Amino acid sequence: MGLPLLNTFPVTELRCTAHKCNLYLWSLNRNVTLLTLLNNKLEDFLLTSDLRYTLFSGQTGTLKTALLDYIKRCRPGDSEKHNMIALCFSMCREIGENHEAAACIQLKLIESQPWEESLKDGAQLKQLLLKALTLMLDAAESYAKDSCVRQALHCNRLTKLITLQIHFLNSGQNTMLINLGHQKLMDCIMTLPRFYQASIVAEAYDFVPDWAEVLYQQVILKGDFSYLEEFKQQKLLRPNIFEDISKKYKQHQPTDRVTENLKKLLSYCEDIYLYYKLAYEHKFFEIVNMLLKDPQTGCCLKDMLAG
Image (cartoon, rainbow, N blue to C red; front, top):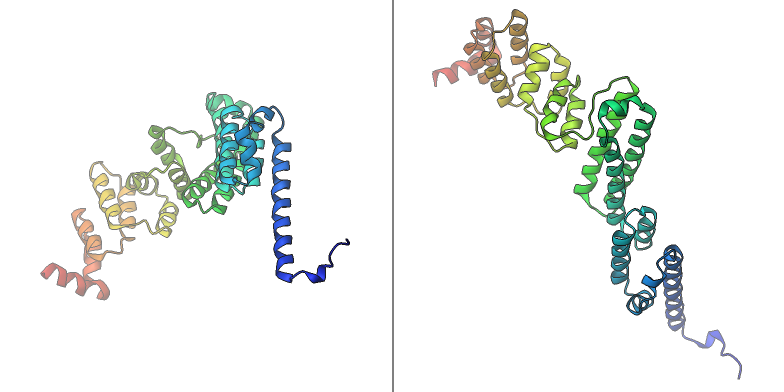
């Protein structure tokens, strides 16, 4: 008896059969790929009856969990096989975790000796940093693919920190930014000449500095108003900042230059009443009179003072 002609089968049945064949072939190819990737010293693991059943019965959730668990326990340093398995199952979060862990290993290698010693071999230090940067970028990308927003953001912040560290080294600056303990963060932030640099360090360590103290040092004492401009652009120049800086000013014996810097800083205060109040407290009467005589601020201030 000859084979039946294809045109005697309903089209829907043909499509269904073809779909099943494709699914089977895809599953078989994937499993063969996994076996090929993992056959090195894993035969006993894969050929147990439970895993053999899992592998060829299509229980992908159980299979990927079992395989990754084995790799983590028995081959913890084999990130290549870990990522290959994760790729087979489109496990982007697990790939991100692996890349992030590998990046942290590079940073730990740097931390294993004093910073001054690392600086003596600048080429090796930069190589470790570049490797950590590449891995952290890959981690952020993988997390983002799996909508792991918090982890992706954390890795992005660390990539900025590592990039800044590399930039410092390339420009002859030896300030250590990576692997900082909590107690050293404020001191590091105070030494950085630009606000964006301080912000990168603070965000990477999830640290909230005393910005009033930073501004007092950078703007009031050093007179660096470009630092203040950067700070203002980030919408961080709130009324409490002016009040805190004013308190710090009172605790010291200011020079004429420091006094002029405070007067200039107060002019950035958009709260007119607070500007007037602080100027009056510091006996900056030329500012007080200017505000009272100004057509735009005078009427408003007089109403507030009368009330």
